[in-house]
Image 1: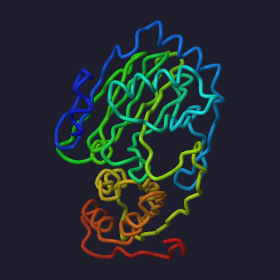
Image 2 (image 1 turned 135 degrees about the vertical axis):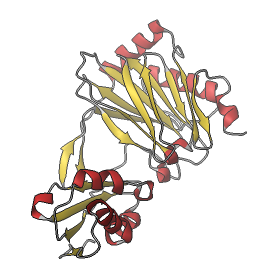
Image 3 (image 1 turned 180 degrees about the vertical axis):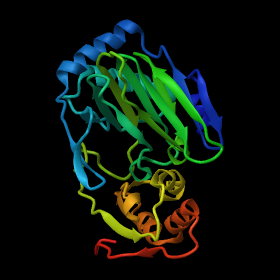
Image 4 (image 1 turned 180 degrees about the horizontal axis):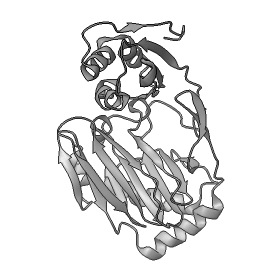
Length: 294
């Protein structure tokens, strides 16, 4: 069955080209059912907090998390999860084997722009996001030209579906908001690849790659960031510390899925050309002492 045919029963096409297909159905679940599911899951799920390594330090994930496997679902799985999975599976004709839950407690909770790890999802299958509770805005952005941004308010009972290709060409996230918003629960249905999926994966501490570049003159590092973060380093989180006044650049990369790409980026011509291009330098850029993890 072709990827496009998986979405024939869903409405509201937000994107549909060679870079992927995104659809949005605002009333996938009626308001009464959506509220009942929210109430059940808010009190019935063993929500957990989590800390992750971001750049050179550990930070708290700004939301609470939950997870259930669906192949098959254990007897302890809430009825709301079972019924939601049944409806989403029937709509998309995809035998999802995993559902991840996010609880956004207020506008300060968020998820940064990202794409799903391609090694963790099965190729050719979509990701379906069912929203319960308060409405929150999702932003979907193309990684490369032609640049495109899609903003969609995820209403309670709505279903957003992204096909596999979107995880290659787009990022998606739920930014923080200063508006007074209530709690929201999202259910992310996925086809996990090549694993038994017996619960949330153990967090692996990813070594940091560190490089130190010495410049003959100050550089506007804000422009360096804009020019250096290219799709070729997808999966890497890069932090260029603002040390331009000292004429040096510290680069830190934490890459859990593309360490090879991060290493080539840090040592390769891409970063150096970005520095040279922004600073209009012809010579004099050198790399100083580097951690052994580089």
